[in-house]
Length: 135
Image (cartoon, rainbow, N blue to C red; front, side, top):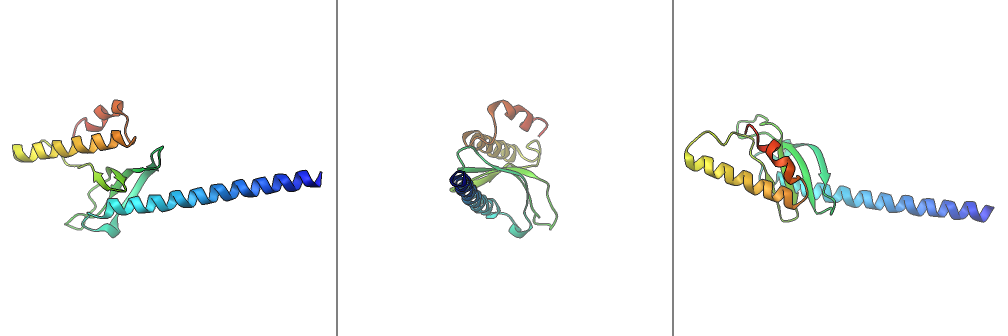
């Protein structure tokens, strides 16, 4: 009976150790990918994240970020996708203003973001109409 208790305790400790190490590795990965997101922000230290999650393969971080802009004000939460090779943040402003050239650039950036988000399992293709509606 004592051997059974000791064996069960050893298995429990080993399992707990596995989960702690895995969670630490995931936390390090998340922090590393957050740095990819903040890299090109005007004020990286002001970045606030929400709804952050790793994709199933643990190769991409998906979520929303809000940071101070060039005027020192928060611009609102914007979706992002980050991988080891970089991050893309979806523009929050309307693509219906400005010159036709700026509208095309805005739409091109959004398409690039959505392709990256689908490729990295952050967005399902069926969710794309609701993401772009009214923007």
